[in-house]
Image 1: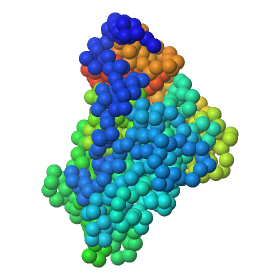
Image 2: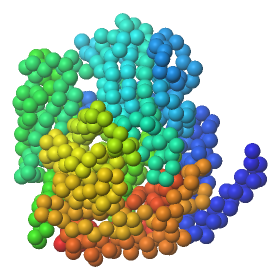
Image 3: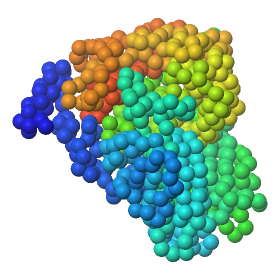
Image 4: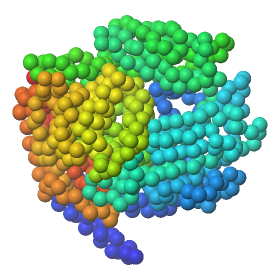
Length: 623
């Protein structure tokens, strides 16, 4: 074990080297010695690592677009916190009535230090005893158990009765557990999880059991919030608002849990607290919600309408609140070239690649403030778009993107790369089903402007498969763009599918300068990747990917400005509509972020980056 003096000399050496590289280090920069809630040392601590405890694990209401009765005063019971836990062998029966050997802090994946487990298991059990508040079952109300996401397959039991079975590590699910509840006393919840990562053809994104290079630590088990809520027998399960092309109304769509015969839906729209529209009609069918004096959403002005919705069936009522922005996204001819237009106006989508990884929580941000941080800093740096790369985030991430005002390219989490020739018909059908489920879940998010089903051909079983998935997505959601394949020039199953709304190339360091074609706009879907590791802020025991290395902070700033200047001076005149710089933060062995992986150090000069970014966006608005 390293002696204390040696540790101090090591930290001092890191700081001296970092300062020599041009970094101004904040007081928190030595927090790599941070311990978390159970006394374990964080491998690499963020500013929020030490704030997490069993009593405050993600306490915010997790579903802002369907809050019952309101986001300010939701009626719910947060089940985040300590659960009993044990790995399984895949053979035994669920451990009903048994105290499990270990504890896990939900909702942090078991590989993370914040979970308290810090070890992968293919099969695991969670157990918790819960007292249901008396008012949850008063007046004939039912009780729903909700899961934000569980990787990969989850089977849920309440008091020994199976109440839910869900496949898919990136989508939410829930169940009405009323019939399984005991008349009194604690209710036992047991969750069996099967979480294969390697050697299986399911959506795993960049998770690997042996992470290296551009692939990272796995994130298994419950990794988003768990909660209970009281609902009427018939209740709203989903509420989405889509702007009509004339930008003066929303189309409102809804889904219902429970028997829906005779149910009606009334929706009222508010702008800054004032009523600006109302609509009524049969529940489950589309409603036309006209808006007086429309106020559009954009990154410059991310205005959001709020809504109150009442589902009525006889004398029963379900009241919820929601929100959405009024905006459209499309491709149209501008100056003779196909360009992306936001609200009918040409817009350059200047993005960072955002992979949503955390050194303390892996897939799960340690706190809501941390979740917001990456989005806010992206906006502060002058970007107007994020490419959410190979991952789906919790609902609150999109809530912050909607509020802060950034557009989002939403990737589909990939099947494993290098296995395209091993995919069975069942694997392909599973991927199609997961894509549909993700689109259905997220198509109410204002910030999402485009879908990306495939990245560089990973999991793409043929060139026509990209066209097939683009068509599938477009049928589910015709209101957004589809980038059928990001990186048409690389790497698995190479080839342009000639489908979707966007032609997309990758070019490191680049940027690539693709031209729009007769049907599609053009973007550089990945470029940049300038690498600069900061001593003392590096993920341990991982080989560093040196690709695109620069020597110090000054070189990184100069390199970024020069790279982006090419987009302004050559890309926009060629007709480009956007770009994606890799990336907003370092991730494990990749040190090409604008921030370190621990979010402790901003590696670039914010003012310089913002200046060239804003100049590029302005040029794209006036092609």
